[in-house]
Image (tube, rainbow, N blue to C red; front, side, top):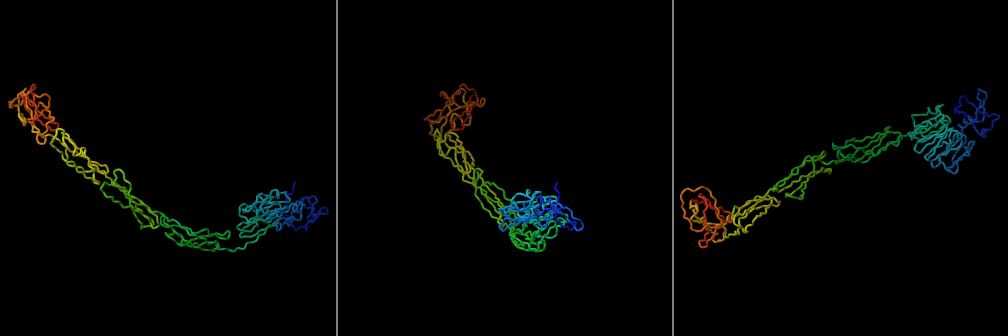
Length: 579
């Protein structure tokens, strides 16, 4: 069973005297320092036997066992008590940047940042050495070690009975470390101290506060530190020009601070600007003042430029419009507004667009409103002029002409007239003037079409007719002729005027009974000529008459309407009586 080491033996002044049977301390008989015997004698008590490990602990607290140093070439050299390899175990053929010695062990930092320990390992002082290559400093206590990493963190290993290891503070804010007998102390980046481990004589609880320190060291049961000389440095003001966008009030807040700082660790700074802002449109020279917690200050100046990068807005814009030709486009007036500029610059451009269908023209007017910062907004109106109205067309009156031929005749008629609101219309006729017109009525359709395909129509009639004499005697034109029933009635007529020389007219006779026996007596003679068969008149070249002997045999008494059809569409009738 191992004896627990008590680091403190300070009840009274004491001295150590070896027993006669004990071997020299440098050569313990058993080879183990905790088994050597010595005699402890005080001023008021008789000598008594004392375990050698306690004696060595006391001595090591004063001289740390065996000295160790590194040479100017970075190699190590050790000398002194070597019972546990403190000297003979010293690593060779390597270079080191730091070294520390405990009671019976040593630890060093290689130049590559790794650690190596050697000597007594009863509490893991050697075997517990951490790996890694990120160490910059090391310290050794009685039976523990502590090292500082490059990232400012600490690591401890070895004997932990008083929290030398487990009580180690965490964090990344350490710059130096020292190890005493059974405690350690470290220097933070803010130049304050922290201690941990055995606190029997105030090694931990007595750690000074309220000041800053530049170096620290630890003895067996005490620590010592150098206070730092405090000289306040003025903060560093750093400015840069900034450009910011204006807000809805046409101003903006901005900071010209470009990383102002204080060179003194732990100092706080306040930053102020004059003028403080918000800043108006344009450029404003601003002074930045940086003041530290001691009242020291420095200033710099820069320019804050507030720019208007918001485009004007469209309040209203005329709508697209379609007009009927021949209207002239009349564009509306848009309205624009701008938060930061009451004097907008407005321009307009007209663009002719392609047309189709009934469109005559299509013009787009684009208005652009720009503020004095170069921001702009646009809107447009398109006016389309169309032609959907048909031309106005006037046809000539009906035309009647006396034919000179039984097959019709060539004739000309007056031209129709047409007008249009946008273009000169084209007039076409279903039968052109100067064409051959057959006997009877021909309807001529006239069409007027404008450039956009709108059209109007009208018609007029061309009548090609015979000129005739009417029925000749013995038939009265007034319908008063009464013939004997079953007699033969001579029906005859002549073509007159321009038709006089036509001898091949196709004339037909038809009749219809229109009423009962007419009043009055027979007043017309009976013809002795034989009745004509069929219904066609014959032409008599001697009399230049067309003749038809109408036989009434088989008819009943009454009023009859005789109709002569010359094929020219003219209704030629007369009434006669049979009695």
